[in-house]
Image (cartoon, rainbow, N blue to C red; front, side):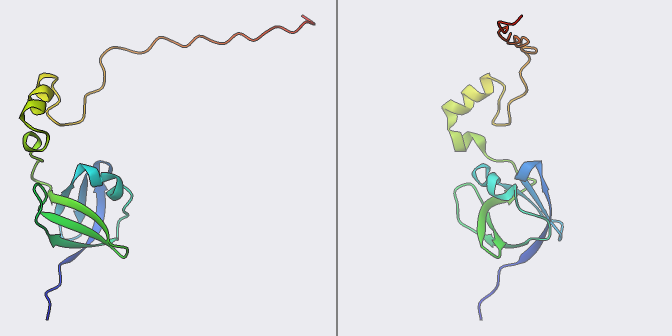
Length: 125
């Protein structure tokens, strides 16, 4: 008899699909390339959790039915950005204050107001 992988019920999608929270209390950080997939998953979706062998991800989350796949790690862990992007690029990111996270909003101020288009006057004017 084959051992079945655990199935959990999705109860919340946080941070636009980056963090998934299950009914059993487990939370998963989704691989950045899979966030567009998980961002549209709805609460009450059944998710099969499989342990996988991947360079950076420890688990695969499979949406049932349909078997859409998202790779993930436990949410209390961070992605090893230095190993993913490489030492040289990571150093460059740090020099700009990025550290692999989303960039902060620009501090350059508000853009100049747009000029209003002036319509042509009719010949009757």
